[in-house]
Image 1 (cartoon, rainbow, N blue to C red):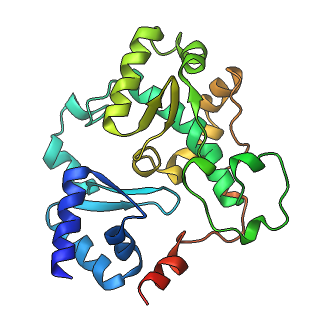
Image 2: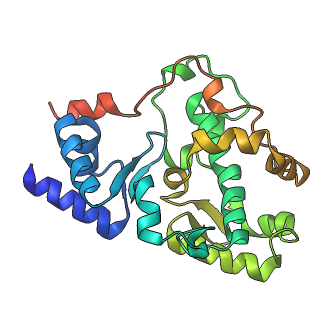
Image 3: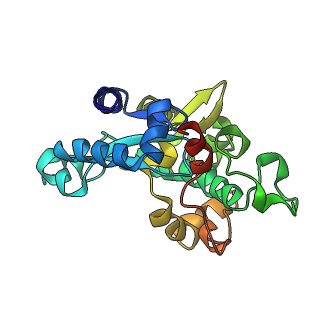
Length: 238
């Protein structure tokens, strides 16, 4: 176990994120002793595991109390410790709203992209999906046309999209924007969803022709799973 713990900790620090399907990550998600020791080692250097069961990846971040000692109390990280300007953060939140909000609704209701708008009487029995089956995409040209006037125009948005892709928030392929490994890990749905759906941004998105869900996805089900693949993972360790 010692070698695996050291290896997984090093990989998380070096690579910043790992897929939930990774063998060592899966062990951390189902083996309580292994997870506790991993959390302890990360905590020793002021870090914590970012583990969102609805996301396809895990990552690491600073513990909240370490932000000020690490980055300082000045304005250099008031907007973002990743070097993102306010317009770039605004673009990130728009993309998150257009991809993750409907994705979470599909996950909670056990629908996939091909099922949108259809009723599946057996949907509640499906395992929760990740990836392209539930995570939609955006055309860059449409995003620029709809939000360019608010976010600095085409050139500035194109530069910002490149930065978001390098940081791992999005993936860009042939003019299409998809979910990157950090989009659903680094931004907290439980904190952001209601603020967007019932806030000014929700109105801005709707006015641009991008309707957001009417309610927080967690209000759609009486009981939500705490994990997505614990049964399958447990079988791997038998």
